[in-house]
Length: 393
Image (cartoon, rainbow, N blue to C red):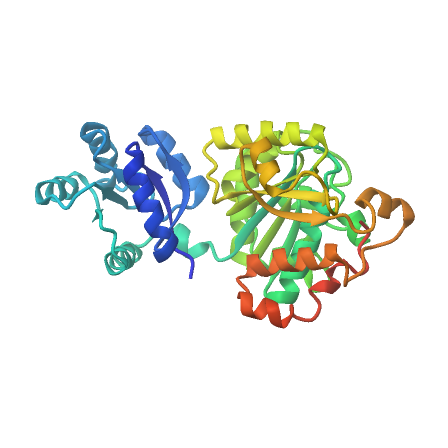
């Protein structure tokens, strides 16, 4: 079960590391953003809305005065989520102080599972509408440069997740200038993302059904046939994805390159942001640049995953070398499918369902869906490997 979505504000890095370590085992909280400095009230409230945080955890050990200013926001409930005090010890005076300032809960080491779960249950009882409404998971795919294969991976991930889970899946093409999802899936002209963005604030499940095109069990929202005439406001993108969460179990988003402003806005609304690169030197240079940019914007390693596409078999650059080059771990890599995606497209062919490429995608989707290692060894559900069949790549 996923933990309670929370923002962690922790200038005390050793305390933060100890707290994060315990969460790997208990999973009581899902840290969607981690700040090393105390933000102002406006920035915190905006972050809560953008990330759909159900709680804000504030380290009070580093600067009692600055922490107090944030905790007092909890008295007027102006942040949009309850605040939790985090300290390095069980100090009765500190507990009393924090509760008087406005904290709803108090956490301290040793972080025992029972205590953390009890705190989460208490926060849920307080009520946080964002955590209740956010039913689906948003997975965003973006590349470091055009042609790296983010769209292909997004398409296959959507279809594989449908085969693995049987749940409702939306594939949304939000590359509003050069979207190609409709081409890959062989879809004709239909309602598109431009139509949905105009109605972002009023979309319900029935309207989603009318605006999307069914394709092999998933709902597809193609990109517009032409770029929008006026710039799309960030609130429209965020509203669209918030609505999609309420209508679908999985929302797979295909984005323009990572440096595009739309991608930078959407990354905050996504549960996981997949950055796709290829192993050529120009792409690796851009990947390193993108990783620095996104990390500087506060995207944690848990929410940003690096994918290497078209990895040659027996190549000289392996995962450890790539981690050294990029200063960031590689989450998964996908081999060439008998040639690059571009070569396959030119030949009018598709990867074989039993190929290494198809199997790698199936394993990737199985991990996302939470399929156990034992289940993977027994074989992926029927249809996952066939996600490649019938798609233009």
